[in-house]
Image (cartoon, rainbow, N blue to C red):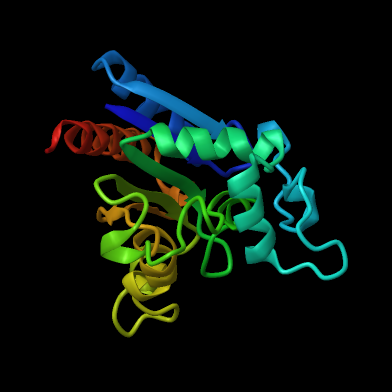
Length: 215
């Protein structure tokens, strides 16, 4: 299986980075192909505008979807965007690895979605949800939170984590056709002792191996 991990944490020594290392090593050892986009290390530009394109449909007024459609028909995406599109098209399983920031994706990862999931490439022409471009592929969010589990439970201060992740799961991943797997969440890793951190990393490696082996 081909697994594409989009990693969005700026600190290589972080627990998020450890999750990416542990999962990629376990998957590679099991014979799977792993591709990682480390967005911060790549210096990935999250701003989505005309910088996405080498082509121009309308030089007067920028309508993003119009330019995306034109670029999709004219091989008009810039190399950095095109490379990510190719990785996405080639994968069987997409993993978004990130810390939960302000109830959502870090800006660099949201910008990756804005630029890479382009009209004409990832959706459009009636291709969405069950008829989406990536139907038959799976996706999973692997994330950490700053708060403890009780803060993300029913009645917790932040509200249920399922509701917080719904815009990512449904309006991004499901929208373009992915079958969305249950997220792997590590709450407040900074407050865990070393033994518990190791236990969580082992559980995560086991989870991705199960996903890679499932039909």
